[in-house]
Length: 129
Image (cartoon, rainbow, N blue to C red; front, side):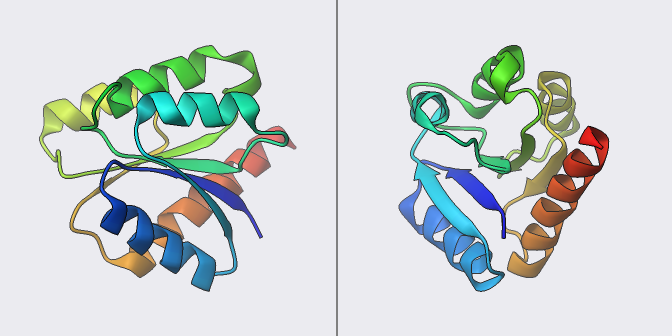
């Protein structure tokens, strides 16, 4: 069982992701925007295994949050999956430069999203060995 921080400003999307991750046996914590995710990560011990991050959110967007997560030595190894409506090549490239491990566009198939998150977690764990 992994722990995943789900970050999205839309409660129904957080609920959908949470429900499917919990059905797959994972623990979920939630944040409503990029700044809230950074605050939650600072308070988490231990850290979650992965983060799903929306791109367009108030206060702090997802790309800025990912850049700050990757700049934090404590959080560098987190798996990060961008989950967003922004599907243009520019957006995918920008998220990649920030440090996301995978990119999923909305609307998504719940099983495919869970499989992507699990793959990112497995890949990150294999890198640590």
